[in-house]
Amino acid sequence: MSAEQTRAILADAQHIAALTGAGISAESGIPTFRSNTSSTEPRATASGPVPLWDRFRPEDLATPEAFARDPQLVWQWYDWRRSLIAQAQPNPGHLALAELARRLPRFTLITQNVDGLHDRAGSHALKLHGDIWDLRCTICGHERHDPAPSLDPLPPYCNCGGSGESRCRGMMRPGVVWFGEPLPAHIWQQAEEAASSCDVFLVIGTSALVYPAAGLVHIAKNHGARIIEINPADTPLSGIVDVAWRSPAASALPQLLQP
Ligand code: OAD
Image 1 (tube, rainbow, N blue to C red):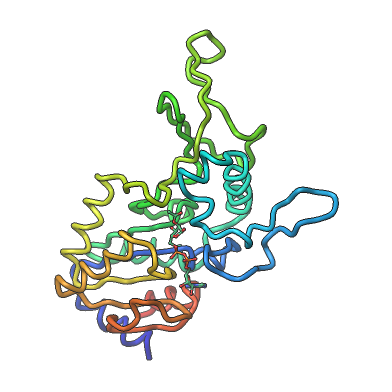
Image 2 (image 1 turned 60 degrees about the horizontal axis):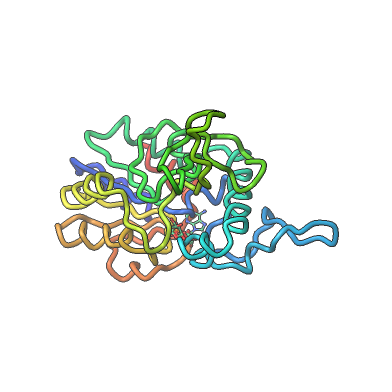
């Protein structure tokens, strides 16, 4: 029923926008932030100091304060996520969104994900929270895009100026947006514009707990868009959506491509 309902709504739309969260990458093997332990998470062993990442909330690791307190710990977490992401492939949900963008008159994809799987599926996504493969120097601001799955040694240091004297030797930080930091203004502006002007807004695989990203749904609703949520679980936004499609994204989204 939700597939038919959603296809009918999409058929009449001129501009569709979609906001994705960690749930769309769950079926690529990347654990969501607020999930229970999954089989892909590392376990502490007697032989190794592998932290049990599910003991930490994202709010404990993805903050400037956490990085100032313990950059090694924060980098270990990001390095672990980088290694999982490097092994992952875009799933049928990512691929279906890329195909929808090709077929529809206007489609804006907005993501909270930093994993780059939308890019690898062939989409152009507005990345609200940055990119896990980007690094930025905490001293000189030099940026580096480094898709190496594991960075050794941790934490990484800036390589501006090569090996010369002018090298700043600053510690690099992940090029992502942390809690308490502003979103990149030009990206947010485009996302807000899409939410304000679309006819249909798809909310896919997000717990909708993190603002301002979740606020895009309210913006779309207030501007008259129909809201379709694709998520196996309820979220705080479920009360305001027009269609709540309780399904994993990788099986729901390909159904939107059917005639
Ligand atoms: P969360 O981990 O908070 O939520 C994941 C959502 O995906 C939940 O609502 C799940 O029910 C849903 N889900 C799980 N499996 C799914 C599947 N197969 N298909 C569809 N949905 C599924 O992740 P986000 O909402 O993305 O920010 O988290 C938002 C932000 O909080 C992240 O971007 C990150 C995080 O801390 C920063 O790091 C700043």
